Image (cartoon, rainbow, N blue to C red):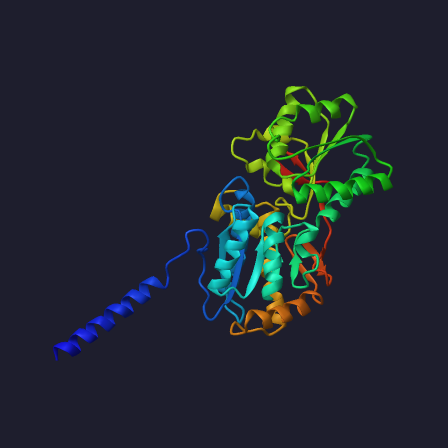
Length: 391
């Protein structure tokens, strides 16, 4: 009898320990939100949740979480369990984060948020046959040669050529300077196609200067070159951190050209310690305008502000659209959560190359077989600390 009691007690304790241990969250990645009402598709992604680029990763995670919460709250056959892992905007850490998600049982992926990590994780997605739809990794190498890796954002070449086209059509500058980062695939890709399109459109590039990690805090040489050559518009294909320094240093030398950026500039207004008046008049191309009057955008912005205390940027909106695009594709394919990743991959490749999607960042959105997205960019200008649509 004593032996039986001991065995029963041991079994009870073991069950209790298992029940407690099974829900231990990851220190870097578990998202909190509306729990799925039934079986759910495991959706994972990596992004910089800490470090200098965290504004991008947190925005994507937050935008995706809002979409998941909305979908799960409505019920239905397609439900999601979302998990993000921190990659600190580092390719090696991104692969480690990806492997954590793979061990968790990730069935479909949001890829990585920024381009260099995404180039590394997209190779893993391709090898493992886990379909990926990245909200914001825009380099060509992210999708090149990978039939199951798609983008919700514009590719870098598209941003460069579209910016040159916009500047030419709107007659924004007669003499143009470009400052770009030569060790960043994002900046390099946009720069190359911008120059090619500018030449085609007969835009006069009077200054073309660059920088890299280690010399990205003092832009006096680049600004002096642009100013001395009479550049009345400066194109900045880069993320917002160096752009913020460039704007501040230009003011210090009384240089006030027009400024034109790309989607990596989105987020500069929420940069800690940044004087938003320095960005007054800055123009950029982005797929999302938080001030848009349509009901869908207004509802998203309201929810985002209530949950996170700030206005969402395009990284948040693109991630939100990714989740809803997945919802549409999975619904159309009649996919079920018991399918393995490889089976879902085949279904998603078929659905994404045949469907037309409308979301926050574009209407009539389509994808070709390379994974590149087709949607129209929107011109924005910063006025009084907010983004306003350009005509």
